[in-house]
Each structure stands twice: as C-alpha cells, then as structure tokens.
Image (tube, rainbow, N blue to C red):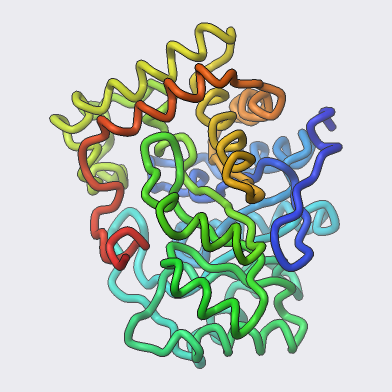
Length: 334
C-alpha cells in the first residue's frame, strides 16, 4: 500500500473510511463500453493503493456493478468499507423511470444488493434519491430496521435537502450525505453542507472532477451516443465553451504546483471541507489504474490562500444545470 493508506477519515455515526473513495459507476457502460477484466484490475489496484471506501448502487449497470464488486469482496471483504444505494429505477445511461422509497421496496432492494454483492452486510446504505410520494419517516424507518436486522451498519442519504437531512437524522443517525460537489457544482454549500456540519454528518462528493470536465480532457463532440453526459445541460456544446474558464483556472493552479488538474480539483474539495468544518471524502471514479495513483496525489497537495481564491471564483462563470432533471437533486427542491 502507499503511504496515503495510513490515513483515515471519520464520517458520521462512527464510520471510518479511507481519505479518498472510489466511485464504481465509472466501471459501467455509462461513459462507454467497459472491459470487465480491466475493471476488476482497477478495483483491485484501488484497494492495494489504500482506497478502501468503495461506492456502488443497485442501478449501476443494471446490478452488474455490484456483481463486479462481489468479485473483489470475495477475497478482500475485510479490507473494504462498502457503500451501495437503493431507490432509483432505470439506469444512468437509458434514463431513470421512477423513484421508490416505500418500506417494502427498501427491504427488497437491500436483499437484492446483498445477494449480488455476495456479502451479509452493507457498511453504508444510501437512499439514492428521495421519493416525495412517501413520508421520509417511512423510508428512513425501513432503513433503520435493516440496521437492527444486522444487514446494514450505517445509513446515508444522497441528494437530500437540508431539511430532509435534519428530519432523517431525528429518526436514525446518518453517517454521510452524498451529493454532487466540485469546483463547478457548489449549490450544496448554501444549505446542505452547513446542515451536515451542524449534525456531525460526513460529506461524500460524487463527480468531484465534474464528470471528467475539470481534468480538461472532455470534448463534447466526441462523447459517445450512450454517454450519460449528453443529457446534462452544462455539457451542451455552447455551455461547454462558456465553462472552459473553470478548466483554465484549474489548469493555471496545477501548473503552479506541478500537479495535474484532477489533483487540484480534489485538493480544493478537501481543503474546502476543512474550511467549512466537516469531513469530506470524494469518490472519483476511473477505468484506469494509473488514474487512481494520480488522484491519491491530491492528499498531499497544499493549496495557498491565493490559489483557493482563484478556484473559488471560477465557479461564478458556470453555465447550465448539473442535472438533466433538477427536481431529482437537492438543488431542485430547495
């Protein structure tokens, strides 16, 4: 393992994880076709390198992502803090068709995930999205029953509003909130992040590299027909041109530090979490093992106050929503 593996981060409710996680959705066809053998090698390399917090969901690859991670867990369950999610129906690539938060569905989804993952317990179980047709107390209550049954260790919530987080925490301790958060997606800082800090809940930013955009490697004209990003307004051709200013800011800081844009984007999130007073564990995903090593370099990158100011200001010029349907993320319900 690398030296980075020696560190750990305490989220909420006693859950301790590696300081950087791995987002499993990248190892599905959502951004194009995937080689299953290479995907497993990437997962194994992540754990070897000290990234033990592995994130997936029941809808990623129609369940195939959980089945892939089961191959890792078969020999390394004790090395991994495993997170998965329920509630979305459909798929990222073809579109979501429903959200389910009723108690019966919560329990059925958990049992299906446990079977696919080949394990008897999930370390962190997230409500992927809020089903507004069902009282939050019913959904979180059913999740709490999974903890009591020994099938789940900790509870998490994804893309909830601050008030939903407070209501859920009054029912059962919440270990983490997972929402999109990066230099170009900062809406969660208005309400959700302060609520998490107040309640002692950790924050797990997904898409911390802006779905690849902040690395400076995304060309809208080359996105595949099945690429999920085609559905996101800020990836439209005109919006991408306007948003290039964010990438330029990241590149300029990276050049100063002899680092990569990805490392700078992750280091900003980690530093920003410290400034805002809550534990932050980003979960970048990748298909390439060498990108894991690159991302881990962010843990030792120090940004100056002036560099943080440059990056903070870059978000002001962002054009376009971060979601194809804002109602399905916290931003659309606040």
